[in-house]
Length: 560
Image 1 (cartoon, rainbow, N blue to C red):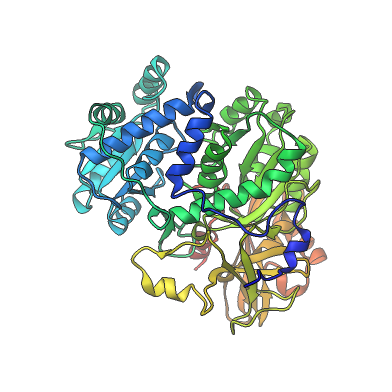
Image 2 (image 1 turned 135 degrees about the vertical axis):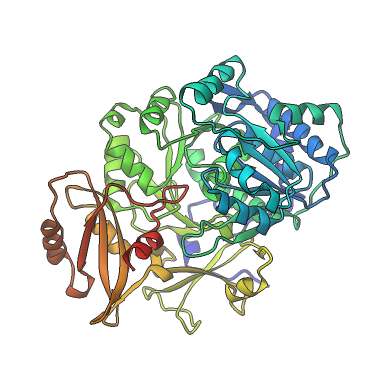
C-alpha cells in the first residue's frame, strides 16, 4: 500500500525521508555497541573536569551489566536509577539495558512518599542511588520490592579530585544526611564484582521494554510510560535524520552537547544521551543547572558547544543574568527548546545574545519524546513547534473525535513508531488515551496549518473557560513575558460564581516596583475582556518540575 501523502511532507528539508527504518538494529544495545566500536578513542562524557571515553563506557557498562546478572535478576527486571547528571548515570543505564533489564528513571529530588510510590508501582528489584538521597530511601525501604541497593557519591568516578569533592559535600557543606541501608554496596564495588564475574549476555530485542519513563505528574498521579527498545530506537533515528541537513551544511568532526537538563528526563535522555551516543558525540554533563553561576562558568570554559537542548525557564534565567553576556558560543549550531512552550520574548533575546535561534519542538514522555520539531535550518523563532518527524502522523481532533480543519483547534493526536506501548499496569488508562484508529491522545490542544506546521495552544486540563469562552494560559504568559519588570508568570483558572472561571496570574518580578495596576492596565490594552486577569499575585518563585516546567496545578491548588 502506498504511503499517505501528508501536508507536512512538502515542507521537509531536502534529503529528509518520509519514514524511518530501524531494521538495522535488534535493540538499543546494537546501536550502543556500534558506536563503541566506531568511536572507541573519543571522549563520550565530561563531568566535573573528568572525561570518559567510549571504550571506557563500553567496559564499565558491561561490568555493571554483569554485576546485575550475578544478582540473579531475571530478564525484564526493573532497575531504578535515582541519579543526577554524573558519569554513573550512563554507565548504569547502559548496563541495565545490556543485561536485558528495564531502566526506571527516578528524580533525585523526590520525597520519601514520591520515591516509595514509584518503586512500588514499577516493582523495581534493584536501586542505584546517590548518597545525598539515601536517607529518603531508608525511610521507606521496608515497603518496596527492592532487594539490591547500590549507593554512589558525587565524586566516586572522578579520581582523587572526587575524594576532595565528597569530603566538602559531607563535612563542609553538610548536604549528605546520615543513612543506613543494610546490605548496600558502593558503585565501584558493584563494577568490580561484575568485572570478576563475567556473565553470558542477555541480548534484548526490539519489542522488549527498555524504560519505564514516569510522567511528570503535573496533572495528576505519575504513570509509567512503557517505552520499548523499538520506540527509543525510532526516535533517535528520527531526530538524527531531521538534523542531518544542518550537519551537512556545517560539517563537524565531533558534536559537543551541553547536557544541562537531567538525563532521567526523557528530553535529555534522547536529545543528549541517546543521540550523543549515536553520533559519537561528547556530552558535557551539568549536575546542577540551577546553580547559574557555576553553570555560566562551565559554559565559559567550554566554547566548543554545538548543541544545547533546554527549556524556556532555563533560557529565560540565563538571559537575565548579567554574567551570561560574557559567554561566547562561537561554535553553537543548534539550540533546542522543548519540555514547555518557548516564549517569543525569550527566543528573541536568546537570538540577539547568541546569534542562534531557539528551534522549538514538541514531545512527551509517552512519545520517546519527539513528535514535531522545527528544522535546524531556520534563522529565527517561528512561534510553532514545527513538522512531524519522519514516520510520524499527527491529527488535530475535536471532542467528538472528528479531525479538525486546518487552523481549527483540537486535541493533538499522534501515531508513530516512537509512541509508547502503553501505561505500566494501567490498561484502562492506556485504552482511554488511544483512539479507535490507534492514535495517542496527548491531552494537548493545538492547531495545524495547511503546511503541516503544528502550534500548541495549551494543555487540555489547563484551559480556562470564562463565560463559555476558551482562554489558553500560554497566550497570557507569552504576552506578560514582554511586559518590562516580569521575569516569569503562570496563569490558572479559579472558580468564579459569575463566569464559571476567572483568570488568575502569578508573577515573579525582575523589577520590584512593578504594580498590580500596571499589570492590569497592560492586559487591558492587549487582551479582550474575558481573557484579562481578575487576580494578580506576586511571588518570589514559581513551583517547577525537575526540568523547569512551571507547575500550574500546584498554583491552582493554592487558589482553591
